[in-house]
Amino acid sequence: MIFYFSFVLSQEDPLQREGHVRWGEGFVIVYDITDRGSFEDVMYFKNLLDEVKKPKNVTFILVGNKADLTHSRQVSTEEGERLAAELSCAFYECSACTGEGNITDAFYELCREIRRRKMIQGKTRRRSSTTHVKQAINKMLTKISS
Ligand SMILES: Nc1nc2c(ncn2[C@@H]2O[C@H](COP(=O)(O)OP(=O)(O)OP(=O)(O)O)[C@@H](O)[C@H]2O)c(=O)[nH]1
Image (cartoon, rainbow, N blue to C red):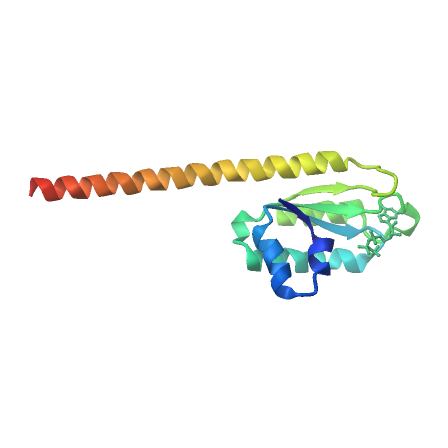
């Protein structure tokens, strides 16, 4: 399940908002390249994600929208790239209006990342349950032999 932050934040009820964050598997944090305030809000959204989810399990990408409005740009591409590097996430600039920038790629990347993380988590979980079973068997054998 993928959520856009603009949608999540428009929920007035904080509990409902938290619910969306809790169940979401992937997130798209979108700012407007013509609105520096929205860029500054990115950290707020990231912190909200970290609060509700375990920081290591948060999968998200950063998107600068309205890339067609170059004349009113307030946030440079380099600033977006730098922030994404800091947050260790993929970065895209696009325009919902003209379709410029590859938003399809952004979604594919997000889905790939969700799958990658799930596989890693699955392996860890499997390994830990195997260890559990091994320990239980060892305990039983020790009891039987004593
Ligand atoms: N030029 C341009 N306009 C856009 C783009 N994306 C959205 N808009 C326009 O921005 C306005 C607001 O869009 P909404 O989808 O309501 O977005 P919002 O979350 O309310 O965001 P803002 O009002 O922009 O803070 C609408 O008039 C959209 O058509 C884009 O990529 N390029």
